[in-house]
Amino acid sequence: MRRTSLYDRHAAAGARLIEFGGWEMPVQYTGILEEHRAVRQAAGLFDLSHMGELYVEGPGAAAALAYALVSDPGRLAIGRAQYSLICAPDGGLIDDLIVYRLAEERFFVVPNAGNREVVTEAVRERLAGFEARLDDASLRTALLAVQGPRAQGIVAPLVDTDLGTLRYYGITQARVAGTDALLARTGYTGEDGFELFVPWDAAPPLWDTLMAQGSGVGLVPVGLGARDTLRLEAGMPLYGNELDRTVNPFEAGLGRVVRLDKPGDFVGRAALEAVLARPLSRTLVGLVLRERGVARHGYPLFAPAAAATPTGIVTSGSVSPTLGVSIAMAYVPPEASAVGTMEAVAIRDGRVAAEVVALPFYVRPR
Amino acid sequence: MDVPDGLRYTDDHEWLRVEGDAGLVGITAYAADQLGDIVFVELPAVGARFERGKTFGVVESVKAVSDLFAPVAGEVTEVNPALADQPELVNTEPYGAGWLVRLRLSDPAQADALKDAAAYREMTKAG
Image 1 (cartoon, chains in turn brown, green):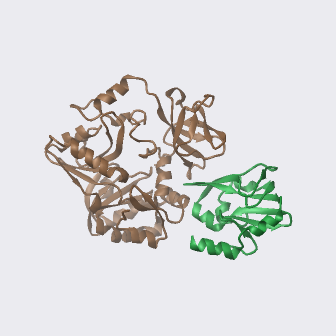
Image 2 (cartoon, each protein chain N blue to C red):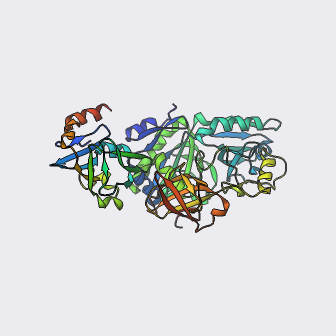
Image 3 (cartoon, rainbow over the protein chains, first blue to last red):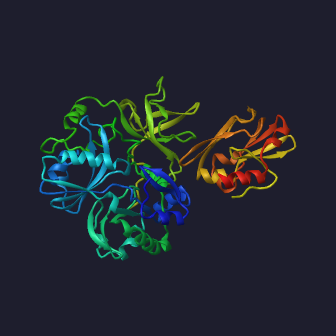
């Protein structure tokens, strides 16, 4: 199992460590609920060094990525990012990822930790024939995220750039506390925040500097447990839960990411056009439980509640720390997907009523 | 981790406080800490009967679902009504306000087979 350069910081902070995507990572420090609330109300510091980081560069980089992914990174302005997907030829999802454009011919791609190798291999194969090369920088790049309403106030004094000009889904090269960083205004929590990509060994001193800067205003270290409840409240999919090789982007509610209008072929295009030509067989919805219980990944779902047999499945579920109700995401037949439809989650020997609601569950106040 | 004297403990981390032919049941501070923030507790109806070792309910934390096992045989005479709205009491006061059920013991002598505090402390220290 791999460890990030921050392992000693996690151990010293009393973190509980788990295996995640081949890495030994902190799932919680003081408690998931407390860490979750800190991110909603103040700020949280995350070690996300297990995530993948790939550079794709060359005169053909934009065209190569447009062929490899379902989005059109060539339309990105320099210093901007887009949420994207990489599909198999059959339209199934290999991963979801963020693509940043660093320069005209230089892109930065961040896949999930557990998919780093398969994404790297797929992108490498798909670059063949394009004037573009791939550099997998994952194991020399650490990633720290500062997320929450106080993130800007904590990060601003440490950087040589004006954060007021760095918009959501923007990225810039910056000096952060004396180290060279890629500084992005992205995240996976539903809050404002920053992601700092730095050299592997620069992460521990940067962690200390950020904690020293932020602890007085409520910055706490946050583990993967709260990261999961935060992203769930924000209605963001997680690969392995909502997304996998058997799911296509349209079922997952991510059709807006697929640019069928872009010029040229891309991997998955024919299959995805065929998907669009037929009615979907299932669609992702948000649920709020109207009776007591917790819906969890893999629980069968009667959708609608009167269905004779389970017709849907829960992909993620938890008590929402912010809303105080039990929430879930689930795949259901399209005819049972309208907001207000009543479903029933099979929990152990019983059925628990749940209502389809609009996603996301939580939108931050502005 | 707190392990009060005078209680009996199971290998599954429940505690039992024997009060004559009745017994109060909860989970230990060690178990509550291992589970993390508890967000839901499912308990049986009053009148339900359980054999020793049978599942009588469920505690759920943010990350995990964990069965509750009857430390001894008995009939449920009371369930903790506070846990419906405040499941976190199991974390904050596992031996007090976070108790789970009260049983009428079928055979009070069964409690003698459970671990005492010293033995449970030893077990959780090793584990």
